[in-house]
Image (cartoon, rainbow, N blue to C red):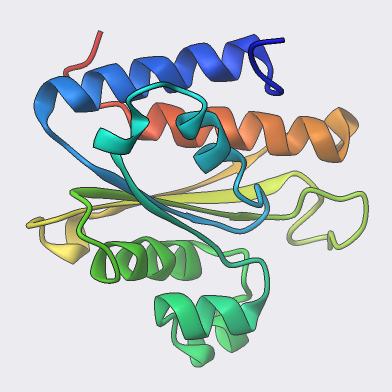
Length: 171
């Protein structure tokens, strides 16, 4: 067995590592609902140490606050699964690393924890780039089907995060 992870995820991670290596770029991750899955996929790839600066698994609100500097009032006001918190997580990962690019993921993988406003399968992603105006950083909410189950939601979230780590001019 070459990898514990699905081939689709490892193949995409290999593209991320190759594209960022070619451009001399490094990345950091701030993961919540994926629990380090994106970092695990990237570090499956030989040579990933040239690209992966660090990953933060900030599953609890306290970890988001302590490790990434997410303001507690953002969590209280918008909830941990929100564009505001994902944006702050990405900013925090960039500020607490030497990476060129940071991606944050926060969501509700289920089977419990969803609400009418934020059902199971709600995942928010954010991207922060060093040297870019923080107001220009991107954040996006995606809704994956709860029918995918916990593992399926986490899998799909990891794939989206890996796509976000590809440079815009990558093949």
